[in-house]
Length: 249
Image (cartoon, rainbow, N blue to C red):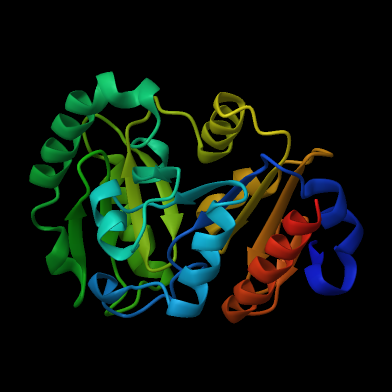
């Protein structure tokens, strides 16, 4: 169980924060509040200003289930790394597979044409390399989720399902999980340490990582991460701490 960062994480922050470190942040629920209409998501100015400052002092990555073009529309500057589609965009090693991923999503979307009639508010979003079935407007209770999961299991080819807040995501079955992808990103940019801040159940495999030079933080309460923030608004205080420690370093 994760510990409150501000009360118990000072020593770990001092160990992690150093020049050249990788600071990775989830978009929805961390940098931007979760809203009923995902098209209206935006980063508050106070967070954006600090993120821009941090990007001048460390390697910054924005990580999201959204596609890269969607994220670019919502950020007034381009961080060094923008990782979209659960890691399928923004890492050069997957560029050669993008055409295959697009074809898979088109086929799944065709097979799911009747899906939106299962409940009010269900919406399918084709993100190019992945599909998202949104239930943000109408809610997704346990019974509906079971029906959707059964439907997804019948798709050909069978996708890998990643659950998120108010959405179920369909990905190619042969792609690595987000934990491995972030480790690859850190290796590629030769970062001496890494920090990952997120809020979602889809990040559990990342949050379970335990290493001396890898720090995980979950927003909105405890979970699998090493530390947690009580509320998304605490991201402002965390960014201030990172900037201050990097200035001192």
